[in-house]
Amino acid sequence: MKKKVEALLNDVRPKLQADGGDVELIDISDDGIVKVKLLGACNGCPMARMTLKMGIERYLKEKVPGVQEVVSV
Image (cartoon, rainbow, N blue to C red):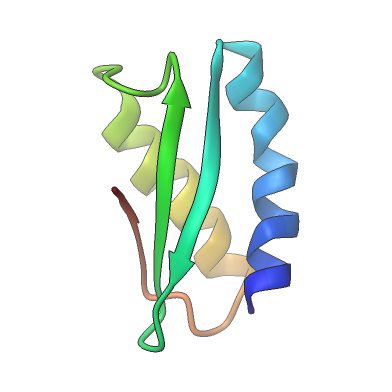
């Protein structure tokens, strides 16, 4: 699952980088919790939570069976 999530994060990364941000995969727990770190302009951005939940989490849940939630650490 980790390789698949990394590949999908690489798909969304250019969109984040276009706004001065980035995302880094930290860990995936056995119960499907994906832990990421938002970097650059994404760190502390007022829209970061929406980007995380409505963007990254929704995309990963669509593409990877077993992903339950994406959280920022």
